[in-house]
Length: 484
Image 1 (spheres, helix red, strand yellow):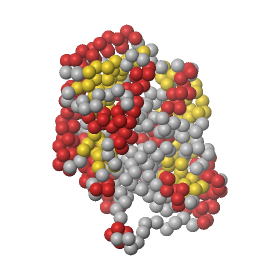
Image 2: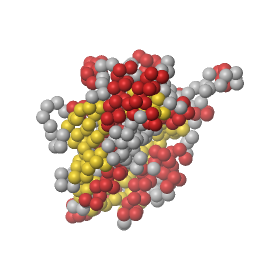
Image 3: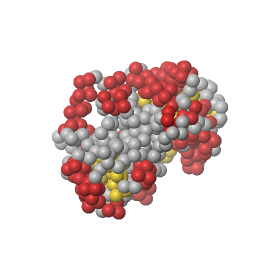
Image 4: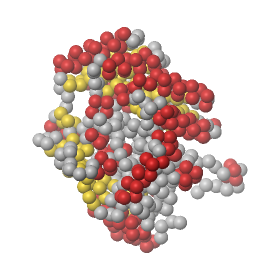
């Protein structure tokens, strides 16, 4: 049942009528996030301009029992920002101010609509930067990063979003405003900041974030190495870590991912090679030089067929452009694809990649692999053709890959979140008691279940009738009826 005019008017008063979208065509732009296979058109989209308007909108939701979903840039890949039918989307895209850069205390205060890369750009004149760097960092926003506890290529050395957020101002589901955390990394009492970061928008909406800034490294050394097999590249990763070296990043791409990236950005990768590693070290000059020589020797020992060392900032940027373009670039070699996100122990990388290849072959589908090899965070991309009726097979294979990661001692997600996509797989990783405790925490924040419902935790509705890829009714295919 659509929201009535009284509720529409209440939202208009809360945010200003010019900040309410009720046109179904315009609302359709918010029907999904980066996981485009699942779509729900919201009844309303709200575009508040400040924290007070966000809180006022949430109070209207609480008063009238309206479900709401917070949304940043919509780059998430797990359906975490999927709208709720007859609910509202609260977009934070207009909360875009950088409120403070504090070089003395090495921190920044920003609103949730600021993009990840804008933080570093603002801090750079002070010799500082923001370390977490998702591949979508040019467009993804810090509010979404907080919701998903995003990582990025450099999380091996520097950690995830939670390691860099000092405090977050939050609008709770009753419309009250609180602050979790403070100016220092450690606070007395329960770590509510830690509970909130990574809660995928199910506990409230962040409206202001204080993040740590780090000094720009003295030097950075980057190499791109080709290998005749995935196994050889995986052995290099293990040997680097065993040598006591902690690179800033270790990334791996397979043949399909390299082919797609080269078609898209021409970064200088070798098309047709079985695997490529991007290894980056940063820190003091002397330390980097010694460790970089060790890394080169390890690569040679495992049959490296080409070793390209970035000789300039431009060459380093080209190498990273190839890696960070991989997800979007896969669209050049497949009409449709699912991006999966799971974690396995580093020692089982070879095993899991062999199993994924076998599963893809059995399903008759190709799987491209690009991932954070240093911490075992996989991003298999299941390629399929929806027009050829391959959607259900691809969806099933994607879920099986996530659950395989759990079977091998890992987890369902490293940084993309559970969202809608993997909620039904949660019992594969957590016991009934574990899930009950999570639900109790969620209920403590949101007793009425209005804040991003249907995400993360499995429910009978979600797992029995969850929103999925649109499948036309037989009468529609016959031309008797049409979809509106």
